[in-house]
Image 1 (cartoon, rainbow, N blue to C red):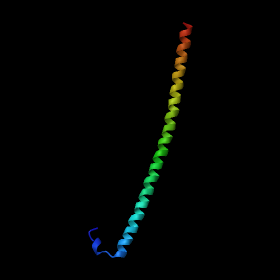
Image 2: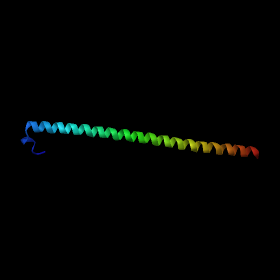
Image 3: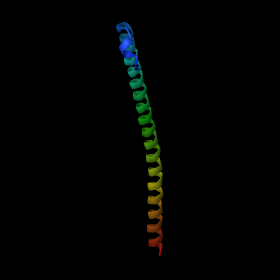
Image 4: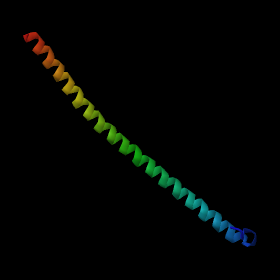
Length: 73
């Protein structure tokens, strides 16, 4: 970019336009990636919640078993 002072105004304007378009595309790509990451995290959260429900059900059943067993004794 050291040769900016020798570029024509037309060429500078074209370079500005290209740079602005590139920036728009980069921002769109970043937005797309952030959205995908959020969707992935939501999917993972749903999976973790299902695992937590299974774990809680297992604990609940175990406590129920212990209480029934203690009543028998």
